[in-house]
Image 1 (cartoon, rainbow, N blue to C red):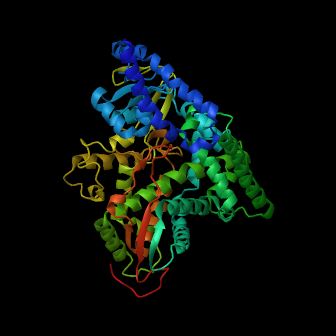
Image 2: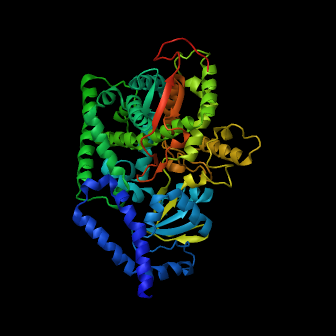
Image 3: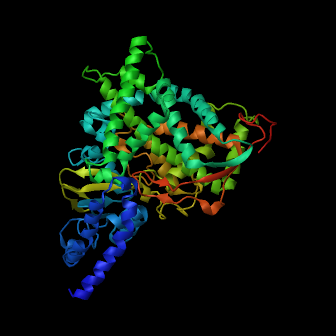
Length: 552
């Protein structure tokens, strides 16, 4: 290759990599030394020097028999990390058009094989345990945050039992009792948005409210009462352990890693102290998941230890917080951008409340709000909090006529399927009524039937085992790893959103509809870019304002 060509390729590498570096290290900027940055920058010309060999290697990938097609890249080792990381869903859709439903790309030295569409979802979510492993894919990320001997740091059969314990705390009876608790927390929180009219930041409000409601319902009064600034800081430090850098590097001598480890120990000690206090005072009849775990026994008669219970509580807190708060924020953002839907939802709620805005919500009333349910479903379709599900390939596995080698990461992206224009008409538009008006839509009928089939399949505690994942709508996953928190998430989201619709007559972006937030792909959860400033007007009568009744 001529020197001029190599120089041109080096310039292309610099154009791609250098602008991305500040974003890549943003959350850890205070922890990256100048020496480390210099070393990283120095790697760019070294990578460019080997571009010719890389290009030759990528062009020959299609000749490797039954291996999936390999996406070409300029920079060895880094591979497609930059292109994928900046716009993953669009990038995956583009590669799907070029290579089909199965393809492999290099990302920071790892070989990532994506299998897309309903068959791909099924291959990952219902793959054989002997072939693919969720534990090997996620343990390095989750163990430092959750703690040892739970979730992905134990055998799959033990994990299934631990899920069964948690599920017992999410019974229909408990879910029914959570509605007034969530409503009260929501009303109390939004007293901070003062005045009949005003402005507030939506993302911060929903993030704080979600952790308050989850703590009050699932973890008990003691945990909720401890949600002061110190515990909030512990949560923040733990949350920083769920960044992309933590997936790439399990352990690094950085302050953020040390803060994560210290926070994990202190949070576990908080739960251990609560359990000790409950037993000492005889307060063991609590209606929360913590009490269920305190009383839990494995099938072999062994008792779930207190430290395991504490670690499971951390897992429950961390796993559900971002997904629920993000979904709630996206849903209220869609409603702010679609005042016609907000008005329809207002009418639906007003009618079910019998024209009385001060009437409290209840579990049965929430079940009679189909448009609210459709709004949440449509939000999850368009803005799935988790865009990729991974497994580590243990032994070569044949999928879609190709063999995926051991050592690869096998990945599905239900989020791509949920935006498929072959399945959803006008797929990027927020149209909640597509979930209600399905009489002439065979695709939507098929999706809803699949949802019903999964709900009816056998469940061993954390979702359906053996139910088909061949669906274009899987916001909570499927198979043995289907999210057990789905029923609580719906109750939590419906209660919060219904309370806000009842409270506010208008709910709009300060800067107008064009201020709809963009997707932020810099963390493991797809959150909206912040801040999200909302201008609001309270209803003439609401549980907070107490003025005269006004129809919608």
